[in-house]
Image (cartoon, rainbow, N blue to C red):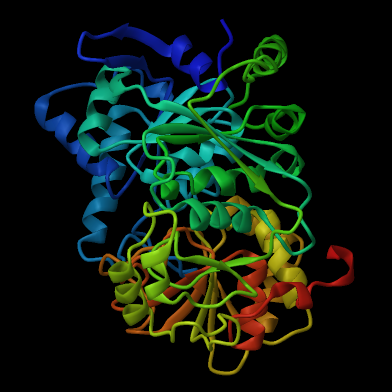
Length: 477
């Protein structure tokens, strides 16, 4: 019987099926962070339960830590120190691997896991964080869970899960210079709505996906959850194998040879049938920017802010209603029907688990080299991990950012979400490489526009939302 990649991974990890339709799935790896992981670890300790296999559990400080160079356990997040201390003590007591604040490997969980080789093709991996699906870019079956589910996985190495359907999105054609994986996924969500993959495990395929590097594929999979998918996957190939070769937690010696042979077989069978398929033509794809308060509020950079009354006559009633569009426009403070380009910004942010890897910083730096951030614009760059930060500094990228007028930070989830810590100002307009533009996501009443690192860098220079293609240096054209 022909199987999709997801079906193969599910079948390999199926422990038992129940009469009510749920499956018991074996969990290979568990990742925790201090904001939710501390809750799971504290609860286990209170109940007198032990982590079943500590060697397969990893923990990182990332969500509520400050990203200033001289940071300590004290943070701007209310009760932040308590979370950090509780996680540190819980991880040490349980014998877990901890990437602490002073660890040179520290970083955002979904950046650390792949770069350390913890996420691998064919493994199941869970974390109490919605963007765990990022790691599907390596062919891992990875998804976000809650703190109570994390407790169950820590003690039993299993989870009870309702099996999703299968979906394939094929991105065909060739991306033009200045168009990136972030533009691909924003276009997909904008075209089919934020609920377009609800109930499905989604595989990304097609010539444009094959052409992406692994970090670009991570950007795609990172935002699968913004399309309401259970997870996102890319079948492993030679790029995947070379990415993992020699990483600290990757197999070594004979184990590597065995793993590689297995990984190369982790593909959907040619005649496998998906429950749903979509095809996107990338030949004419433009840079994308969100205009509203959901990732589905996306238009091409040459487009205009929508007119809400047009939603009444739309063929696809599954996307935003007229009332939803009117509310989003009121919040974001843009005039309907006007071009998106040219709207002035207050801030520019490059960071998060979506777009803060070394390739993202290289692209942004190439645009910023020799340029200046527009006077009055606050610009911040937060590398995705301390390893990314060190690599960028070894290449001199940090000097390009700072010479242009960006703040250069240490790694963390800083400024990606607002929960009482550091944030952008009230009603400030921010162009950002993050994955969510919900109301008050980056600060109280802050207005966020999602875009690629190229678009953010170019907009920082212009002081307004602009097409990055006019700012690309010759080597990127």
